[in-house]
Length: 414
Image (cartoon, rainbow, N blue to C red; front, side, top):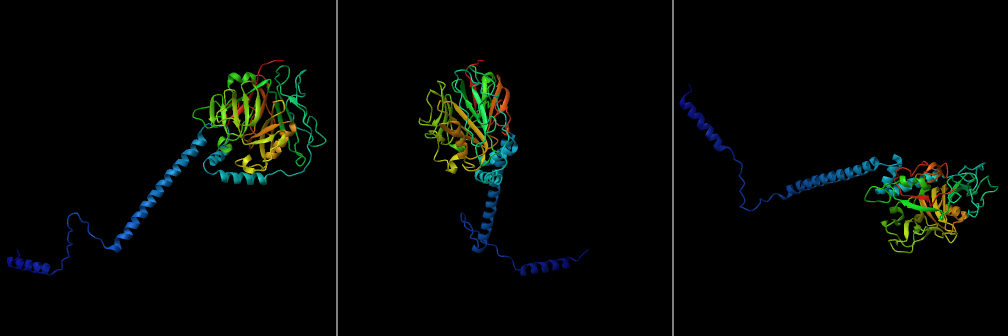
């Protein structure tokens, strides 16, 4: 066993060594309630680093929230029921979510690159529409043939043809085709004339346009199809036209003074004119749909047709695209016109030549321009005004995204 004296000697050496070691200074504690002062050179970088880290976290979180919101919006637009293709829905979503300028520039570039060339071989025939002959009844007014623009005229050019169902012994809807521009001899326009004394006009909201707070039928009601004689597209989306929309007692958007308005009155009259009343139509108005200013007034072209932004929020007045328009003749009957590769001026000239005293542009672009008529009662034998129209002849007989017009016979006969 170790010697006790040796152990004591070892312990004494250890204590002596520990007593000689330098000890670290113990910082004085600040008085209660006071924080210790830190060296100014060390705290600032740490504080900046903490602030940068916090800012990055906030930025990442905000970006994630925005991307999630965009993704949900896009997914909702793609997954909701629709009768248009995915590509069109993507374009519409971009336009509605802050990219309208980009879409417009791309569309304008596309249409400019694909603009039709002037000249070329003349057509030898026109598409056959309607039923041969006008189907006129004795004592019943029918519009005169439209004078040809290109000579010699092709067989049936500008001559009105019946569409099947008869009311008071004659079809209330007549159709024709013609070549509207000598510089583009292969271009064909389609026109329809609607006798407002034997028909009634209805306006139906689409599933999503105009914007609404509930589900819309978006199609011709089944119980009204037995008297259906025609359907055609409405105007621009309300956010693009800034116009009003009213059906019966419901005002989807207030009417604006000066805007061109297609109006149906309770006494059966139909008119196209600038709106002069208040934001809410009176009880004598069945429907009112606005879209831009008039393109024809007093039988003359509007002097403002050269103002690009006025005639298309996305494409303006000069880009040649599918366009449609509606007007009234001197007797108060409706005239509808549509054609590809049209400007705001050229579509106005087509209606002017057909006898319109006032007219307004409707929707543009191939996905939206539609005029269908029916060869028999009950919406039977549906036909397009022009074979080149993109949408099916049965459009509006099933739910549609956009609002549209329907034409009904007031009574049957013949």
